[in-house]
Length: 75
Image (cartoon, rainbow, N blue to C red; front, side, top):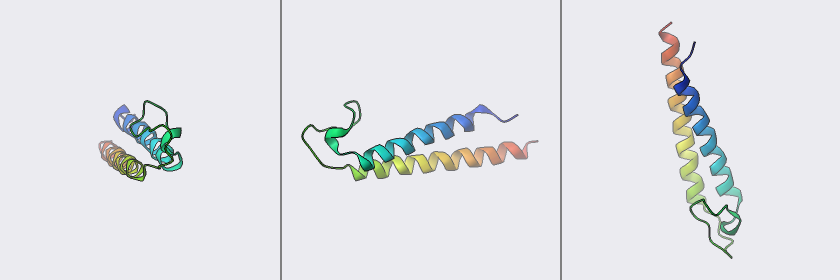
């Protein structure tokens, strides 16, 4: 049986991937108010926020994959 930690890390990676897509496709006035970067009456797209979220997601995916491979070697 695999450990739950890589699954949790993978799910958090999916959340950050979704966040990157939201930042990439939504202008600042269309973002939910709880997200950093919300600006009323602004059509600015936060590409740096999207890129940062994408990088975090890819790092989390890499950690989850490595963890899966290391846990598979234990059996």
